[in-house]
Length: 431
Image 1: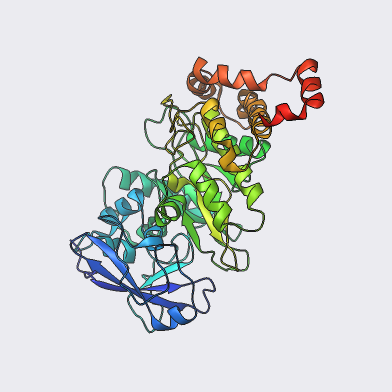
Image 2 (image 1 turned 30 degrees about the vertical axis):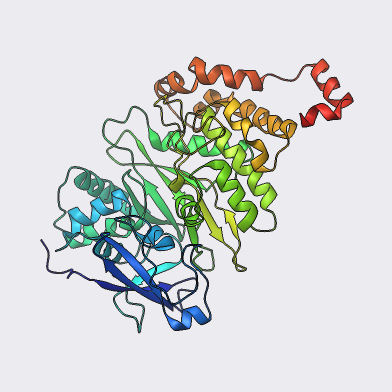
């Protein structure tokens, strides 16, 4: 174990919307009975700050985590996830492995606008170093392999390359990298993957854009010495000006509101807390749900949806991310879809369409538009460089009868009789 990183039972949370002028939010403390982390707001923040999430109102109370082994409210989104914890365990080997250590050692590049410091007088995060550049790609890939295999990198300079990515969520290997002066999350495939996940994710994101979904910008990077590609996803929680955007995962937002983890619940949360254009946001969320069903993306859990806070304290959906086929043929999503819970059916998606602000005919129109786009997925993937063998592997899942038949039922053009019936009988559109 390393003595370079002493254990902390107290840290301090800072607001980094403008990194040049950090503001103290409050104190973080270990909650031993829950193996978690609490937050108490500083007086100055209570007087002139914002509630970080609905379960962290601006008062003098000690805000405890809602669950064991978690942090209070929005602070939980500032922690590293399984991959980040793995990087810290292997590369840093801290003397103690508590949530406080993981929060501290994640460094300064974490999700959103929150920062963790050892001081309450000045923002003093763990300094890891500047982001790696494209020229570091081969070294990054080698480090990812070492961490995946449980090896410890001996070269401190090499450890620095991967250290910044410890703050990112998820389970798959990843790093942070600067491309063209913009921060990106760089995602690697894993040994034994059945298909090139980098190419598949890029193609899926571009296909989602054709379906009217706002997606994070992606680019594919060949990895020296590897047959599979990495995919670089532009960070949407960073503005070109350098401003950091306060962000919440759907998990934190819905738990803070006491809601179930579901797409309809998230749509209603947007209705209540969203920006003035929340109706379009709700409609787009419906599209995302339908798209995930049809491409067999069953890894659409609540941390794979994010909300960005505006200057006025309202929220909007972030661009979509982590969108690609799971290739598992589970038949259920990770979040509630409709009245049939998480079942991966379009019938289920339509069952609660009203909670997305959609009338029945409008919801069916949205499903039809997405289905028609997904129906051309094979040609689209080939156009974006996905090998024929990978398309065949993915087709075993995306084109299995369960999904193909649902897609084909909506992808076929409306007949002239159906169009005329809808035009002559507006009331039918609302049934």
